Image (tube, rainbow, N blue to C red):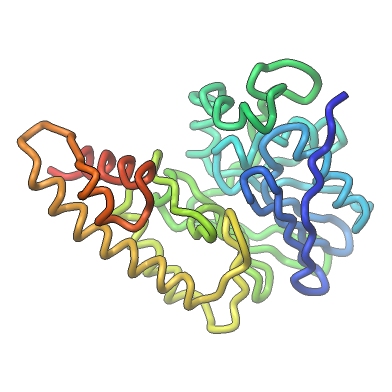
Length: 278
């Protein structure tokens, strides 16, 4: 029998919780109104989703809606479990929906060690549920009853279709902000991501509680540091790419050590720069 993966639950204010999924240290959000409750990202498959759903039902028995911040499997592969337990409204950006439709099955390999049923397309709740409620580029508000959510994008960054969710002073950023590990650049435009972090930094107040896609809750100073780190990495990365013969991709161990993201993500970071630079 599939064993649920139990998250760590932290209450952020009277209406907001974050649930830390232990497999990828991915944060799921819960915001409870008088009529509805919103779930922000559903985990990497049925094992995490079952643990999340049980934790949520210990907090509220209200009808649920789901917001997917982006289309990576560790954030959306729990959708099927929630749909099977009565959730009808799944919200995402148009770019996230397009990615799931075109590349969702490729994402399955990301979760193969934690969610083997999802990776192998076997067992209950292992189908990919694609959101049908599209959040426009201009953003929208969702009413939960006495509690209003602002759901919005800021353009391409970590992926082509990241969403953020604001509720009062609580801001769920998805993977636009990362704590406890390097940013993931596989689908990213690092140049635009740095610009986005600059805009996010200017939009946040000093007391904004920022829930990143992974890791611990952070503050505005953390976003500033991530922004400065990415700007420095871009300067160093452009010099590294310019040092290679035309058309080549051959980072040395020394060059990878010059970047702050560790060998795997630094390699991907340089690949993205090589593809994006003229």
